[in-house]
Image 1 (spheres, rainbow, N blue to C red):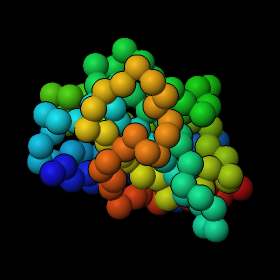
Image 2: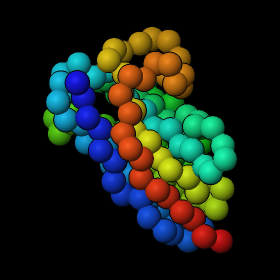
Image 3: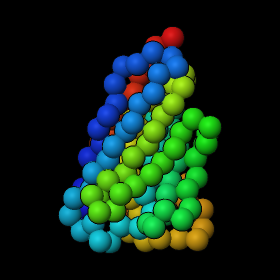
Length: 124
């Protein structure tokens, strides 16, 4: 089993930046792709960014503002959020797959482990 714990959320103003972190515990050697999703109230959970195990491939819904990275030596996943907007307000989830893949990284079906989320609130 793998446990994921997010941190770094908070209340910020539009234009501010945040770094979200996710630490993995347990059978971390089994983790492949890792990603971030977010869910706003009344909306479905949507993909934000993802990264393969060795970092050779990353994707982001907004590469000009959101950047994903990981440090496998520390079992850490990061999401840098820049120039935040009120519409970025959501609960942000860390997710991990039990494999790497050459296929799409943004499907929820790929991810087996999920964290509890960290809240990001952006005021205008």
